[in-house]
Image (tube, rainbow, N blue to C red):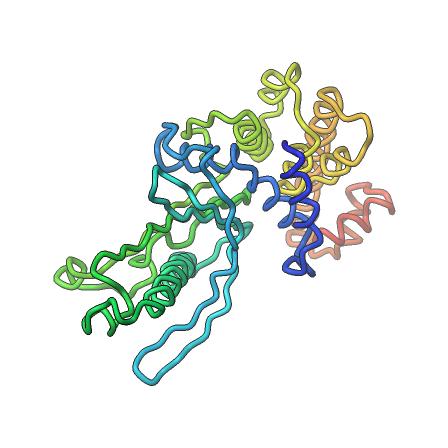
Length: 327
């Protein structure tokens, strides 16, 4: 990571835009702001791993896409801010690439993404219109109406929704999914809007090239699948950065992994130790769930209270309180 990016990241932490935002959100945004990672995500998800988006051609732009929408006498001001936005210089022309970070299923995600992308177009449209007004005498009456010249063109906005929860996405993935049932005649003329959704759970289908991005998806997916043996096999001899460990800890909600990133002497052995502790916690959690189920059966079948059922099962007082909280 260059010194310039490090300085920008420090400013990003202190930015007023992130007051009150959970630290995990800030960590996620900083991770994906690095051009190599950002480009690799887009190339893997949208272009089957081909190097279409060049990391050295990415320029970070303002995440604020707030804008005003005018319809005749009606005026609506919308204030919106995206998570990470890059401008991609493809030769002379450029595209706007947006990344939305999503921890929970959002049942209006297609509509939300449509709004964000639309505001991106409106923002560029207003900038072009402003420039054209300066040269009002050089445009035709038709051009004056819209503020655009016939030669003016907008640049494509492409958005990826990165969903990183353990729960599979079961919400809509297109605007059509949010609609009432339509007859075939209407469906054929309806303008649908699909989201580019990437999930941790099924990320093994993507061809990642960046080692940090590959490790992030791979390790997190295997934690969710409780396949710790695979993590040990693949990463026991590989270097894993503290930044990546912190990301994995925040995504999975594992305190042991998250705390490990704060220690001074991190390393592969610490990573494996954290996963071993995670596995043990998962096994203990499974045992607790089994006990809870057994307690409930005793309560139902023998008309016993929770305390009475636990006494019959020989559960000690310390564990009683813990199990009652979980029940």
